[in-house]
Length: 468
Image 1: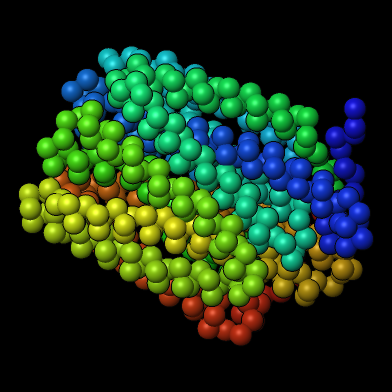
Image 2: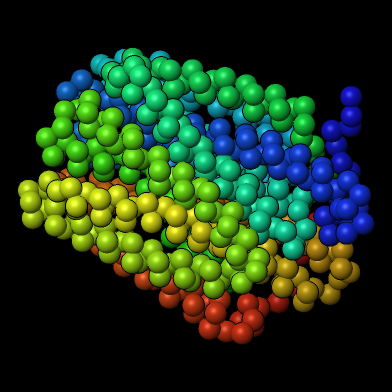
């Protein structure tokens, strides 16, 4: 039995890193990714469950289903703030065990209520809210891995951690597709999806218990979050995170429903529309998740702000494609022809890929900004490094929460657009305007000035170093 606690961890110590440190970091990264992966799947479980909920049986219209997807996104976003400090207080290993085990609750609730078609819509909203427990896992996982890796490798490590977690979205959608293809889209068959995740939850908690470690010199209490938010760039980062991660998670919940509505408008039966939507919906989240580590890697090489700016430019172009295709479909009584449907799908998939790249880049900006700011502290290099690590870890949780709220906004905007016009076109044009604003912020805050700290007050007066 090895000791699960590491009393003093310094990822910047090159000798210690090369003599066993990187193996320890890698082992913790692997199980952190797996636990976060399962958390993301549970967080997005209702994006799959709604494919098994025909309107004539559950009496929930498309607008109601979009709101059903928004609720766990909202809860998960709020939980990210307390989850950020949980690994510092309880230890990364200990908290991963607890947070993974807690996922049993939403999995069991989904298993039971998907087989109760007469359940009220309010009850379904409450049940979906519990899936938000899976969304909180991202913040604790990212804060923990931020501690294990040195500054020169953070972009790749955090991108890999987040990307591996994001893969939970397409994986559960693939499992849903397999169930629909083999068993059919009746609500009872959705139980198979829930049962698979109950097994994976046990594996995640067990793996964390056996293979992860607690770093005892990790500090990330809420006072560090307050300190981080005194840096003006922190708010710009949070805004950019809405545009990248908010887009990814919002579209992940909504893409399948948009496809299902489009296929039904074209004359497909409810079962056929669900199958066709499931066959396509997973592709976007899958490619977006795989792209995210490369966004971090390119940010390590070219700078997070540059990669983020070009990502938003590409997202503008992809959104124009989607909005134009939707506009053409509106002119055909909301029925997308073959070519229009292809353009809609390609545009959406491009949005997933580029939002993943941009998300990896924005994540890299966080430790870079605080590493630069730490140099102005009148303190030893060790204290500067600890301040940078603790404030950046705290901010990761905050921007993760804000970014998740962007996913809520996407679902609510789509719900409003469908309710008012029976089309998503209005929502798509709103998203395009927002990406223009994101590009302007990325350029004005991080690229227009030669150095990220040139416009920020020095953090030296704050009391954060006393916590180190």
